[in-house]
Image (spheres, rainbow, N blue to C red):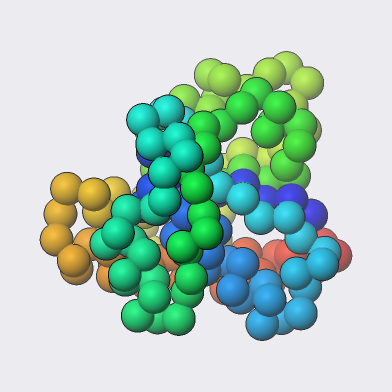
Length: 154
């Protein structure tokens, strides 16, 4: 199974989701059965590491995001991945426009799909440290629910 997480710049929310979910998948011993990636709808940060505040908050909880690099969503991603999960409505709308007619990937809001409180992972970029902690809280909940779905599909 192949899962792609998407936010706007691929330096805060989606790399956090990639790193957190990858960690939980490894703990479950399923790393050889999944491909996990993240991307952004915009190209502002392509090739850059996740935001330093994102990496610091993740590190405090035992997640390593240091090797991740931002990339932009490609049309081929809609055929390459089984599941594309966005962090908010704006990025979902952008992907719905970009989605080709022959897309095979399921497309949904990450939190809405798993019934996590609210349906949006808020962008912490312009806020304080508590925003990065909130993002981690939400993504950890969503990742556990996604892991349950993955186990059922495999």
